Every structure is written in structure tokens, then in C-alpha cells.
Image (tube, rainbow, N blue to C red; front, top):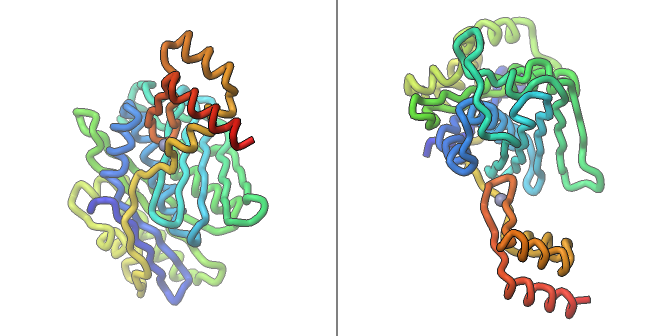
Length: 295
Ligand SMILES: [Zn+2]
């Protein structure tokens, strides 16, 4: 029960807050993808940000975040939906980097400079696409810039992952705080002073034992608010054998058989969850016989 997302509305709707504790989810991602500490931090922040943004969606919609920078991690990719599922990967999860000048995992260097793409599938004909330059590569700051620039919603985003000495994830979580257009100056000032508690990072508060409700109370201290939603979130992928069979069919029988012969096996891996799917010669025989029948 450590992957919890909570949404709250404050000051008669002048401010809305999304808060999550995602420690187990990020540890799950680390174990699936064998991520190095800096890759765990980059992926964990992006997964947490994606999960929180999933709360802004309606049923059936999904959001994709792509941090495409020139750093050695080679890009961070996340997809989240409105039902509490999130999945994602780092292109080069094995990359290790020295700590930055503050003694923290150097996510900014790992991601590098480039572009953040936000793609929302809202169930319309064309997905919504937004993009902004990566301002720091620290993920949270990049999302802050995206909300302000691309969605014209003044926001503060804090995302953190604390990696333990054995490389497991000790704490992960974050928040998105957004102002609505009619927000009054006194509310804004109060929020700014509340945010100072978070200046050392959100994971310190989580390791102290703070719950999502405690974090909301800190963010909205002195402001009247209601918690409007609470839900669990999990690392969950939507791949399955049928989807991978379609990819094998699209390779064509000849190419599929050539791979099987030269590699001794035909194995496809889902990028998002690292699940492996094997196809034997017999599988191919059935698959292509079936595909021909359907033609
Ligand atoms: Zn998958």
C-alpha cells in the first residue's frame, strides 16, 4: 500500500494538488529494468510525474512523456493512464555517473539537453502533442516549464527518488501543485512559503514517515482544502503475447525464420516492462498458417 496518489482542491478551487508516494512502483521498475542508481532516479521521477498526470485524465485516456535529451541515458519514456497504471523505461539503464556537485544523483547530466514531448491520447481522432525544450533535465523542473509554457498553468512540480546503498529504492514520490486563473495573491504567497519545506526534496519527508495526507497538509498549510480523490497506482504494462504475435507476423515469415535460425531463438522484448516473449519454429508455423487463413 505504498503506491498512493491523492488529489486535493484548495482555497475554493484556486489551487489543485496531486501528491504521490511511489516507492514500491519505482523499485518494481528498477527490478524489471536493472537500472543503475542514476537511471532509477530519472525513470522513477518520470514515472511518478506521469502517474500524477494520469490523475488529470478521464477514463480510457492516456498520457505519454518522452524526455529526449543528448545525455548518456538516451531518453526516458513513460506512459500513464487514468486507471492507475504506469509503465516506462530508460534507453540505457546501465549508465552510471558520478554524483553532482550537491552530492546527488546527476539526473540532469544523464538526460542532457533536448526536448520533452507530451502526448495525450484523449480518445479523439488526433492525439494532443505538446513539446518544450528540456530546461534542466531534472524532470520535475522540466514538467514545471511544460505546464507553464505549453498548458499556461502556473505550476510547481517536485519529484524525487532516494536510492539506498544497496541500490534499491528507499523512497520515491512527488507532487504537482497548480494555480487556477483566479488564484489570489495571498494564496500564491502562502503556497510559496509552504513550498520551502520541500526545498530539500520530497524523499526526505517520505523517509521521515510522512504520508500522502501529511504531504498535502504541508503543501496546503493555512489554506482550506478537501481531498477529492485517493487511489493506488502500479507499474503495469499493456503488452501481451497476442500483441507480440502481430509484430512477428509483420516481420514476415521469411525474416522471422531467418532470425530464428541465426539467433537460435526468436525472442522479442517489450521495451516498457522488459517482459520477454519467445517464439519457437513451431509457434511460427502456427502463427503464419493462421495469418494466411485470415487473409
Ligand atoms: Zn510490456
